Length: 511
Ligand code: FAD
Ligand code: DLZ
Ligand code: SF4
Image (cartoon, rainbow, N blue to C red; front, side, top):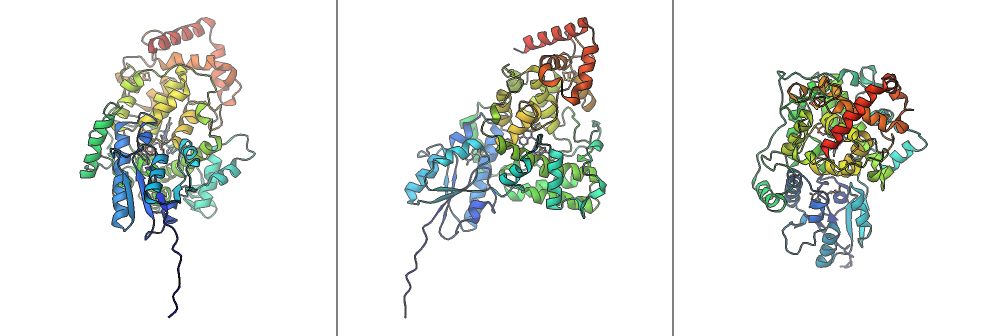
């Protein structure tokens, strides 16, 4: 009988990061289950590069441990390094090198990290190959091609192309219902006696309880309440959370998308971003499920279209901007804003009822919905001229769904206009009137939302005019701000000074 000398390929190290918890992630697809070793590493460098909310750390570590167990049960060989392992080098690059050394494996594969700082760190790792992250609908190259030669990058046109590409809510070549965007139907204020669904909550199992103890021991001083901890930490539970959202909240998602209510942190929002951003759910499965709810008559078009637009439009668009503009994007500062972040962003101790509510729920839930992030905490920082790099760090730390690729464009671009209008056509600056229209916060506030100046006036009011006046050179020619500047110009000099004087007092008091 003839013997054949088969050359066995060398085993590979397959690195899975804390936000890559998907069975079909590129690095796992490139792996040979019989031979290769999958590496997970809990490391201080990731837990500390910003002072993350305690719930965010617990969520990521528990989801990592559950996913590693799942892979083991499917027959994978897993090397799992815990945070308290005495040999832990405490950086991902360090753990990759240690595993290569100890296991005598030269070649390692990782799916490209979501954050630029980590992709830079990986360029120095010997033998490490980086594979594209194809969990997104648009590759870096496709986005660059789309952006090439455009003076302004606007989400709406990008979104239409993705609608066509995916066929989501398309009727042939036309958008379902004849319009691409139903946002104008989605601006209703909510009423406290409406039925309020809650996101699905999960009881911590032993693995999560161990992680909660670890977080308490190591990060107990970090911002945020660790308990009660109710996030899903497995794909199965995240799928149940999706199903629950579609059944109980999606039908009203559109109508009340921009509304805010005291004591209702979630309203009709999905609270799925933390699952999506760690890979427990995929963008297309969420969108297909929502589309089905529409076609089965269980959700109106304004809800389904509005929701799908956030995921295939905004989410993909901001990722494209991030990779187009990094490095450097997180340091952009169009208005040259220099004020330090006020301490009350961490304590919630402020008389402004809207800010206190948004910050308290951020502390309790590691969550605030989009309009709170944009029009309350973001708007205040913009009007007050807070250094955008400090605002960016705060947002990256405090939300369970925060990763720089999605957070930075939303903060630096959308909220702080620090990129000078690359992402948005005008700053999201608003006086108290907007918050009053969309929420019930002002009714219990110690400030008077109708007051224009003086001690009792809503601070957003004088700050709004101060912001416009201060940044007049940069904004006056913006066609979308023509009317507001005309209103300012028509004011008497005495009125203008009153606003500026009042704003000065507010700014002195926040320092
Ligand atoms: P829903 O309101 O139910 O929306 C559905 C999904 O759409 C979200 O889960 C999310 O995946 C996606 N989505 C909605 N809006 C956006 C957007 N503008 N950009 C990208 N995706 C979007 N989102 C993050 O995922 N991580 C962040 O760190 C983050 N930081 C933000 C900071 C600021 C200043 C602002 C204004 C927005 C930020 N967003 C961020 C976008 C948005 O606020 C959150 O995605 C949303 O609040 C998450 O809650 P949800 O899952 O209930 O979302
Ligand atoms: C957010 C986070 C935290 C807190 N801890 C870890 C960790 O210990 N190990 C890990 O692999 N990933 C962690 N992550 C997620 C990473 O920060 C994330 O993969 C990068 O920011 C790239 O997006
Ligand atoms: Fe916020 Fe002004 Fe309303 Fe108070 S009055 S809740 S500060 S908008």
